[in-house]
Length: 102
Image (tube, rainbow, N blue to C red; front, side):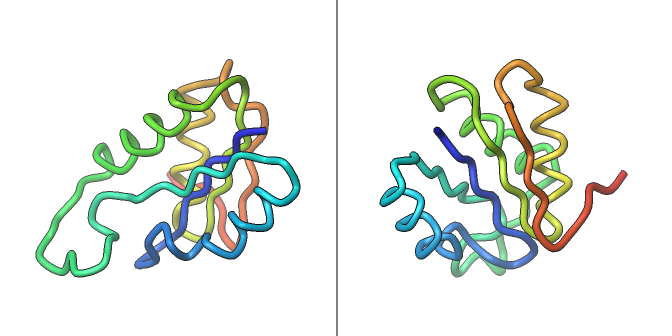
């Protein structure tokens, strides 16, 4: 299964490195998302919610078949938005340490 992984707050996609390795070992295809505004050295880089949603939707669209979208912390909102935007592609949403906001 393709699994889209979204790290929350200031964390970048490398926060999922250990998890992604284990998911691969189990036969899954992890896709850690590099969110605009959350990459290393991006102190001056600004990103909007729309920019981050677009990055998540690109990962969902690039996956083959239905996906599991995992949101951590503040990124739980992004996971929920992805499920709402792509109901046919997102099979399941997992929210870790957070909840969808409005």
